[in-house]
Image 1 (tube, rainbow, N blue to C red):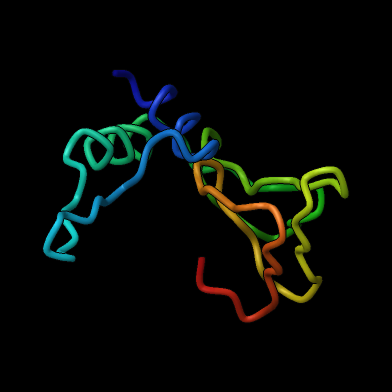
Image 2: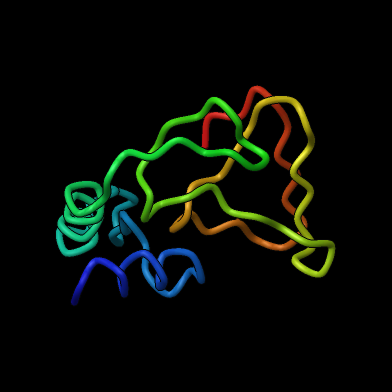
Length: 99
């Protein structure tokens, strides 16, 4: 699976970065980890000029944009959610958010 598919499936919740076994222990999903690392390697640092002026990050993993239809609140004040992060409907993200 290529990194673009991994990021897209993570964002929809179809894939998880870690899975819990029957004993309650968490294990990293190696394929997802490799996809995320490949995405960072493939990306180039760029300066953002829109809502995130002064930020420099990978061009292929931009901050997500939400709309009221997503059912997610992203409260102003310095938080962002990177592409590939799953955010369920009803979630409220408030600064300082470590997502």
